Image (cartoon, rainbow, N blue to C red; front, top):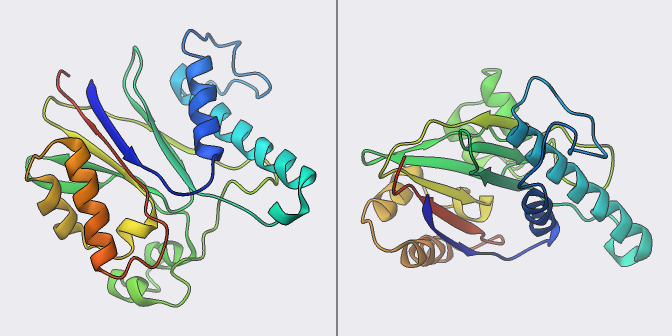
Length: 218
């Protein structure tokens, strides 16, 4: 694996999660403390889950120390590449997409009110795009109870690209437009900037976070 690039605006909690994942690079099944090991998940799945939950607790500490931070929250998405299969984890409506063979596929499911309505058949995808509650998330890192973290393994191939982004991008730039930009196969730094530019050209109504990873050797 090689080539990562990111442009980030927002909370430091995802960075703390990344630090926790790095700290447990040589972990075993006893190193997800202070969280119990989930035997349903791989070791790397447990590492990411623990990292997200630790970030959530850091938010709680920050809010307790500074009343101006009370009510803060963030969504997060991450990819961990180690010795086994790569692992994706997310909380909220930050997304992970897989670009393969000129097609872009969303591989996470938003933890949002409108997505729940779409999955229940109450709203169509088109309705969800314009619904006034489209930004209401049902899970977030907010300093409360340990969040439910969705975790999945990936089978990646050489030439694949992974896109991680906030809804500042996915909420305003259509999937086919993002696929077109990624499919130009420009260097990742330039691709990230082109995606951010597309979001700003579409109005840029929210913070825009974009990170990418390219698979050179599977």
